[in-house]
Length: 316
Image (cartoon, rainbow, N blue to C red; front, top):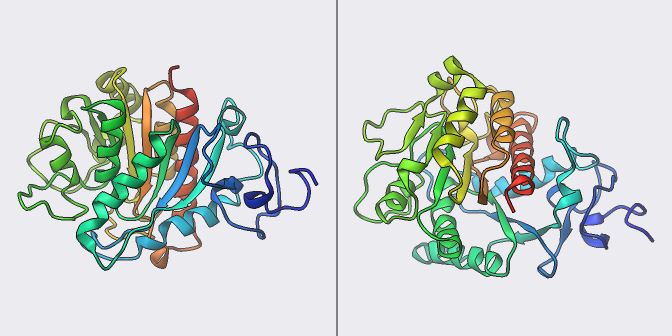
């Protein structure tokens, strides 16, 4: 039986490259029908879920985000996304590693468990695309990538919120992670960009902020050009909180804020960043209980594919 026969490519796929169609409505659900495996021999990128939502400050439910993103991705898995110059799966061997395991009954141990999970993967060579989960997961993920690729990293951060609210108590909180990352030298605010913000935090901590009104006024090309100019060739980590999108495009999230980006703007901006030195990436805060017609999960899956495209385009 070949990869093109029988379906269930998440289990039966022999070749890690290429796109092979199967019914979108049936079969084992992996991200984009990639093979489920923890054998990383010859693997370029690992997709892994981090189903944490106990750091959220408003509506919970993002623990189901990885599952929802995977399910939504199956509708896209039969061909490359429209407009891409090439199919990322022709250049990248991508596998679905499953989810990070942690003991929810010992919350103080969870950050270290996430960092160790990421380190176990990236220390073997592959890049890592993480599916959240609430946005706190980006903090241990950043620390793992900084150890592997060198600190400080550039942070390319899409969000409605700055997530830099001051905190001296080392809270496990999805609104304080980048405060700590900046203070600890994990990221360099001067070489980092925050896109789409629309909640008030007067202390930018030196981050370059292209808030939602700036994006709407100046346009997609300006965001791309400014981001590339700030980041340069520095190793960059891209994190996308789905609430960067306006709630009309992404209702299924914990802390929605009106006035955000359209899905078109976000997809075009991310694709336009091709050529950056991308070393890690995540899509977070998809909460399917509040979704409508799976549009938030589909947006998350689509953005995740754009991130894989960026990884395939990164300088060698």
